[in-house]
Image (cartoon, rainbow, N blue to C red; front, side):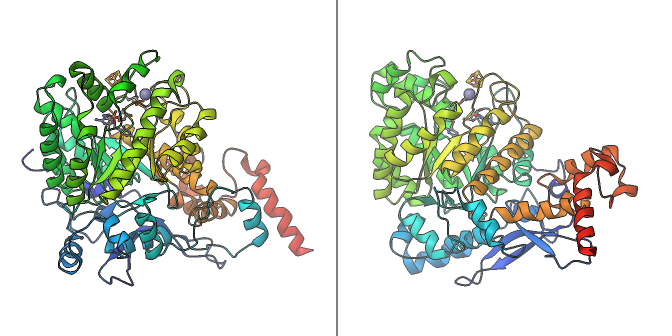
Length: 552
Ligand SMILES: C[C@H]1O[C@@H](n2cnc3c(N)ncnc32)[C@H](O)[C@@H]1O
Ligand SMILES: Cc1ncc(COP(=O)(O)O)c(N)n1
Ligand code: SF4
Ligand SMILES: [Zn+2]
C-alpha cells in the first residue's frame, strides 16, 4: 500500500455520545499527558450526583476531536523526548533496569495515573456495603491509589511489565501485572488466504475502539514487514509479534531450513521497527515432544508446532533455548518484553493440564530467571483449552513455577462443543483466570478454529473480553472497578435512559435494543421498558414504595 485513503479513521470513534477526551498531567513529569475518556452524566438535573465518569481510554489520538490524524504520517511520537532526555542522564536501560536502580521513569508515572484516575468514588461511602462486597475477597490487596513508586517496585520485582520498545515512540504506556487492571489483547494480522494492509489498519482501529490494551500482529501472509510498519506507526498501544512466523517465511516455509541466525536477524529487524513484545517458543524442549503423542489434538501452538518439527527433524535441541542469553541481550537493548510462549498448551479439553504442558511451564520459570538477570521484562503465556475445574491449578502452578511473573492466557476455552461461539466459551474461562490473578487475557473471536477474523469478529471478541476483564477486576475488589457499575446501576434505577446508554460498554447496541420496542422520541424518560411495561415494572413499583414512605 503506497498511501492510505480508504476511510476516515475518526469515524470509527464517533459512536461514543457524551464522551470527550481529557488529559491528566504528571506531577513528577509535567510533560506527560495521560488520556482519559470523560463520560458526562446528566441525571435528572435535580439531584446532586456526580456530573461525569472517567473511563480508562485505549483509543489514542483517534478519539480526540482536536487531534490531526493522518494514517500516512502515523501518530505523533509522544515518548520521543522522554527517551532522549533520559539517555544522557541515566544511560539507556529497560524499565526493569531503571526500576532496579530505583529510578522512576515517565512511563511508570504515566501508568500510575492511568490505573488510578477512575478510582473516583461516585457515591458516598457506605461502609456496610463495602464490607459486604469485599467480605469474600481473600486473594488480593490492591492499593487504593497506584503511585509511581508502587509501579517501580512491581516492575523491579518482575511482577509487572511495561512493554515499550525504545523504537515505538507513538506508544501510550500501559502496565501488565496482577495488581493492576486486567488487560486484554486482540490478535490481528493477515494470512496467505486473506490479506490487505488497509484491512489490517481497519482491524487495528476497531481493536482500539473496542478497548484492546495490546495487539498482536500475527501475520503469516504477504508483505509481513510492511504491514507491521503501518500498524506500528499508527498504534498507541503495545504491539506484539511471534518472530518465528516471519523467520519461516524467509526460508520459504521449509521448517528444516530454519536456524538461529535467521531467527536472530528477524528479531533485530522487528526490534528496529519498534515491536514491543515477542512471543518466543523457547520452552518446548526436545524430550517434551514425545509427551504429546497420546494427546487428543497434538501441538496446537503454531510456533510450537514449527519448533517441534525443527527439533525432531534435526534431532537437536530448540535453537531459541540454546541461544537464550543472546536473545536476552538483543531484547534488553531495545527494551522489548519477553512473552514466553506456551508451545505445549492444550488444544482440547481432553489435553488440559497434562505432563507436556506443565513440563514446559517449569522450563518457562527457569528461563524467566535468566531473562530477569538481563533486566528483560517477562511475562508467561498460558492455555488454551481447560475445563473450569482445572483452571485454578494453572494459575497456582504458574505463580509457583514462574516466580510471580505476569500470566497472559489465551482464553482459556472451557468447552470444545461450540465452534462459532468460542468468544463465549473462552470468555468464561478468561473471567475465572483473571479473578485468580491472570494479568492479561488474549481474546478469542467467534472465528476461532474456523477462519481468519474480520473486523466484526474483532469487535465481538473484544466485547466478550472487556466483560471478562472487568468482571475479574470486580471479583479482585480492584478499587477502580466498581464505580462504573455503580454509575450505570444508578442511571438504570432512576430511568435515566440516556445516561445508561452513554455509560454502556457498547452504547449504540444498548440504545438500539431499547428503541426496538419503545421508539425513542416519545419514551426516553419513561419509567419502564417493554420487558414488563408500566404496571409490572418492579423498579418503578420500588420507587413508588419509597416515595410513599417519604410522604408518610
Ligand atoms: C494463538 C491464537 O492466535 C490466533 N491467531 C493466529 N493468527 C491470527 C491472525 N492472523 N489473526 C487473528 N488471530 C490469529 C489463533 O486463532 C489463536 O487463538
Ligand atoms: C496467549 C498467547 N497468544 C498468542 C500466542 C502465539 O501463538 P502460537 O503459540 O499459536 O504461535 C501464544 N502462544 N499465546
Ligand atoms: S485454526 Fe485452522 S489452520 Fe490453524 S491449526 Fe486450527 S485447523 Fe489448522
Ligand atoms: Zn483451540
